[in-house]
Image 1 (cartoon, helix red, strand yellow):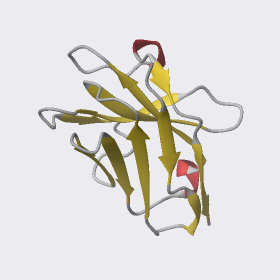
Image 2: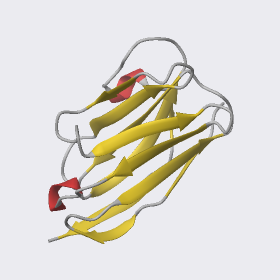
Image 3: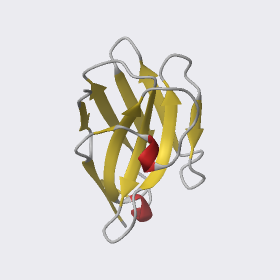
Image 4: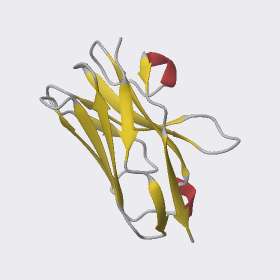
Length: 121
């Protein structure tokens, strides 16, 4: 079993920045960030292979968000810049074992409780 604990959410004005962190209790192969706004489905944000550092982003955040990982610390980060009101959501950390990019929630085995990000206009 892998426990994931997110931190770093908060309230920020449009155009501002936040950095999310997610610490895992064990090493995994792939970690990712998803988000879910009220009344909407959970959507993919970004993913990273923890050993090689390969990354992949949703088009909606490309160029504004950066995912990074520290395999020794079993931690993944999401640096969010140029935030927009439409980025407001509960952000979830997810992890899985195996290889390959996966952007669907069902591909991930382990989930954190989420951290709220609110962007005011």
